[in-house]
Image (tube, rainbow, N blue to C red; front, top):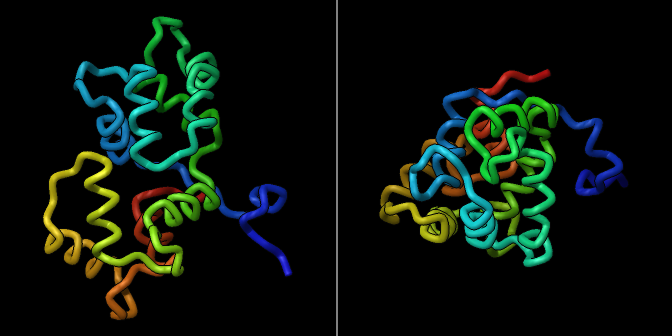
Length: 162
């Protein structure tokens, strides 16, 4: 009856405050040249790697207008964290959307092969065996896949719910 994919219901889902160490790792993923700041080009490249629509990539300038507090043309880690805090943290809807990014065949579960494929797109160097280990670590029910609830648990393990 209710679809939680609808934005009108997203406010009733829980919100989580991410762990600063986790956010540092996310920031470093975007900062591909390791200069301590994210350029618009780096941000766009990450969106493309995640399979985001070109229309979203074109919105990067607007994102930077909001996030680049010191107006130097880049997002540093302090600005990155401020964006997370000002945005109210990570919504459960955001985690559900991340699940959908990894669920390449849209069957409602994430396989080791899907993790491997997505991590390759993101520039990670890992083997399929590594990805199987990752899936096994999150696979509570032992079916060989990560379900939405297992993904939610894995992604929020180090976050504070508020």
